Image (cartoon, rainbow, N blue to C red; front, side, top):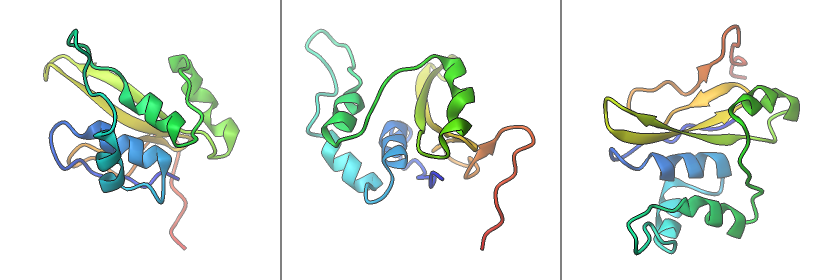
Length: 126
């Protein structure tokens, strides 16, 4: 299960989500430091998905899938998780969240640890 890492600034959701999907020993601080080694923009003003290269460099398998591929996450028994990016028009900003078989893990302020799907309940703490 993904452990939520909350945002520290209004635009560090990517750092949080990358650290969440990579899991321990990767922390917010570790990913933030490593992210500085990757280009954050191109000479023509575009913003490359630096985390794709970072995940591969760190030995993680990364690929894009269709949105309806989220429904297959429970089939992998927790071994597959993902990142879901979205544009929020009223904020004129991008946001990214982590997804796993239990639901969405949003790093935004005041978000719960997991936004669970309908009928899904977390396991009680041992």
